[in-house]
Image 1 (cartoon, rainbow, N blue to C red):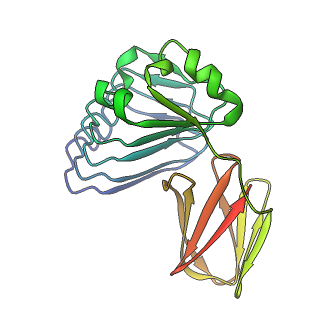
Image 2: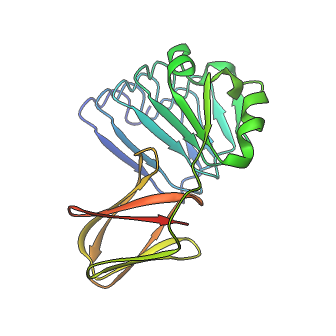
Length: 207
């Protein structure tokens, strides 16, 4: 319950060296709209984001293995959930998400894992399960003075000074950094199509 009820909190970045998000850590943070969970976090404990009614999208990195009771319970405005793990993470009780989320939110998963999620005892409660689109336009693109290249862990951006934002194909923010003008390496949670935004310019890459 470290940040429980912090109603003014709007953004949270959980870094890769965090293994577990604790019980009720961000529960009832009603203004929370932007949650980034780095690849490396393996467990989300009970009620961790319970009642975060401002959340519309959540991306679960490939490293997530366990999600416990009501971790996203009463997050009634969730419109999409993206799970990047090809093996459905284990639920500890079917009420990890609210009934409304199961009924109305889209679940995006790796293309090769769609059937696994559709037949999983808990994940099958989502009525709308779709593959993360693999379409892209190559591993490297150039936009003016801004070069974006795919790396082993994510992407590298050259010639940028200022904020760089990376979004998944469903519009979820997955990374945000402040570039200093040289080469900036950005770790990403998995393979797929990403939209990189620098100022009013965007670049799409397929990693």
